[in-house]
Image (cartoon, rainbow, N blue to C red):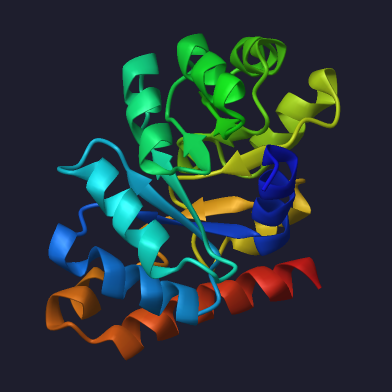
Length: 215
């Protein structure tokens, strides 16, 4: 798929599940359960062990479905190249590193750098970012989306970090195009029990909250 199609599908999905701290042995059943819960965008954090192998494993397991697998916490160009080679369709970061944007643009991969200030947001868009990850969202809250978009225009912002079912509607009302969610969506207690139905139910509850927020 062209990267603009991937970007639109991320927006359409409304939420990206952040798979942080999931063991390699569990990554496929977790990804399958979260996808069964209705989440189509799955992010494997690149700061964990064997991230590239996890991305490739999810890509193989969910091939032929509407699932999209990407990488998060991609801090530099070398890390970006590794996850792109593993099959990541989108790349997120908590920081702004123009080398990551350049690698992804050359490879036709959606890139979502982390920003907090208007200067960072402007630099990211000028460098060719597709979307902006407002991180950590909990530090500034939903109103910060409007504060950024006021002077910078209709920039696509994905708040991540502290977004949950109780506040997700506030972020969409403020202008978010999508959100990222980790522990609020990914039930790690259920993962430890290998209760894949509970993992799917947690994901489904978040998807329902997003749908209600957008209704």
